[in-house]
Image 1 (cartoon, rainbow, N blue to C red):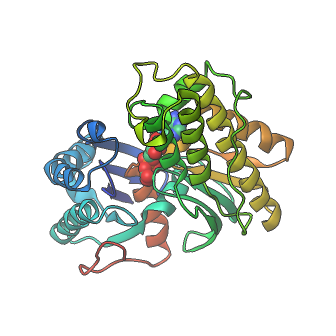
Image 2 (cartoon, rainbow, N blue to C red; image 1 turned 120 degrees about the vertical axis):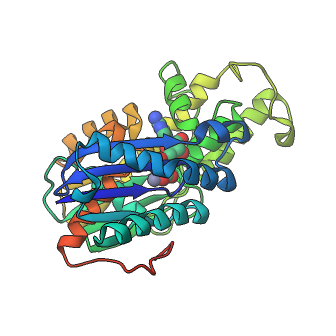
Length: 338
Ligand code: KG4
Ligand code: ZN
């Protein structure tokens, strides 16, 4: 069964063809990131306009690269939320048109559950398992009993993990998105130099990243001898003499928290399988430390290949297949958030 996946929840426009929920035949993505860089974050209006301009071409390219014909497609699976409303509606409207014209079923799927499924593309993971999604918009722990029985165990109470990377990069006067830049600088930094830590939460499986972001802000302000409001921009690149150490100390504190909570969730659920997805999972240091900790705790950890960490349509097509096989489908009244 060939599934056309469409993902347009934020600044990536992605289309993929996946066979039988596992085999990725194509995954084409166009990003409007370059237009958002100068603003230091995604501008929804620009993102949705770029979705509209690129979605047809990206989808045609995905079908061509998969070496199939449009008429071979058996199901259209599309992200219906969460995400930016305007961007989501472009993908949903496009998916509806394709489904209507081809006379094939349509299915709207949850973006976060898609990030979980990214770890299952081209590999088998036995159900149930614990899943951690760490992206620019979300940081959540789930108990995945089945693909239609996913229970939220904990989530961020304030900033998402990737958002904290982006904001700390902004404080340090670094480029957007902050995650890859912080990762690069952290390689040459001393992670023990600053004692940053993530705030405690009442539910031990919730997350809070706004405190550590503020701690970095005040550390930089104190060290620079400038009031917080006048920090940015305040030096040339490298933004600050201890930038590498701040990046390394921040990154380590965040990774330690993610590991601690994910392993705790496994313990609480009595499970030894952990699937991790989302943009932050592109971070090599995170992968290495998670692998080491999982090994020590006899837990098997599954990561998606790097290309399926950031937003992509392959994960949406794969998850769509699984849900369709369970009897799910959507009508032409499908809308964002539904
Ligand atoms: O999953 P994603 O593409 O978007 C959402 O669904 O939100 O994730 C984007 C986020 C950004 O915040 C970006 O800074 C972060 O993922 N990110 C990273 C790395 N690469 C991307 N964070 C840490 N280390 C990285 N190497
Ligand atoms: Zn995402």
